[in-house]
Length: 250
Image 1 (tube, helix red, strand yellow):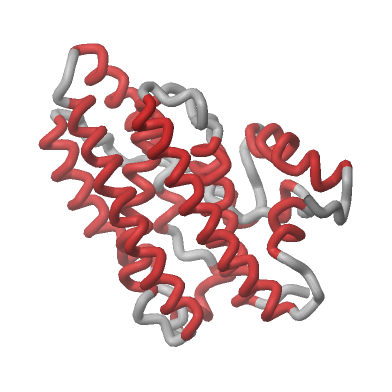
Image 2 (cartoon, rainbow, N blue to C red):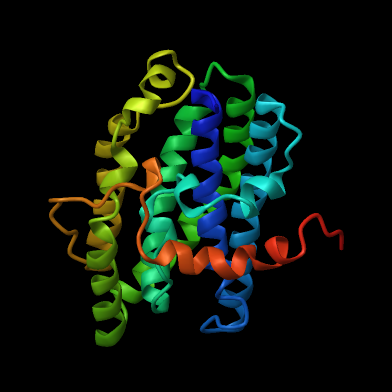
């Protein structure tokens, strides 16, 4: 049975893998060539981070698994990513809204994780934070551009923020399975990150002339393996080749 630390690291890895998979879907479909390349690079950042984390889980478990086993050979209920990561890309505004809001959260999270008593997690945070800070900058620039742009672009980014908002609450929940790690200083207490995140998002919304939604009921479940209807559809093409030709080398 997987331990508390392995389960938590798996959760971090799943967030990066699933978001990376969604961003990769923009390859060849970006609104302009530069953005097509940018999102593809961000997807590689996410998947690279996931690879590091899956390798660490494999080391701790010692069951002879590789990162590919965790990425491709688990069922839907065995993934622990936040629900927002698996939502369809929608239009470019929705992708940017999700990218901005999550990147702001993850930058704050990684900043705290650099203080972890777990050496691997602290080093992972230092390395990944450099990439995520650029994700914040890029997505924020687009929020500002759309929000303070044309009537159509403003409408789209406002609708996108409204749509994703009720999925952000899960990021700041302190799950019972993680309390031991939080109390021992291994991982941050997510709920403590909320005020600073709200402050940063509020500043961006004001500058972009976007109305920051009022928080209410929030979707949750992904951290515990309960997903939206979209998760299975995402995993099917992602896992097909590995499942159809197991242990293949190419």
